[in-house]
Image (cartoon, rainbow, N blue to C red; front, side, top):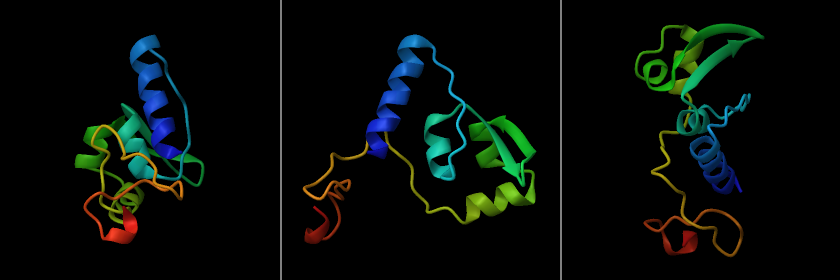
Length: 98
């Protein structure tokens, strides 16, 4: 589901110049679909900037904490299609995950 949404948002951004405003709780997703990011702590913007700049050199302690506590993965263009259970397939994982 999430990979389909990412693909759709990327297509709309490219084809229509669409701008989206979203407040996901998944900072890894933000890194993969946004160009700019505003990090909020308790409803207050504590950091704002280009996604790559913010992730490469976070200035605020809350931003650093979010990044450090996020699983280390990046989407490489597309996620693998869902397997029979609906979860993305891990082609390099154990047999139970393919």
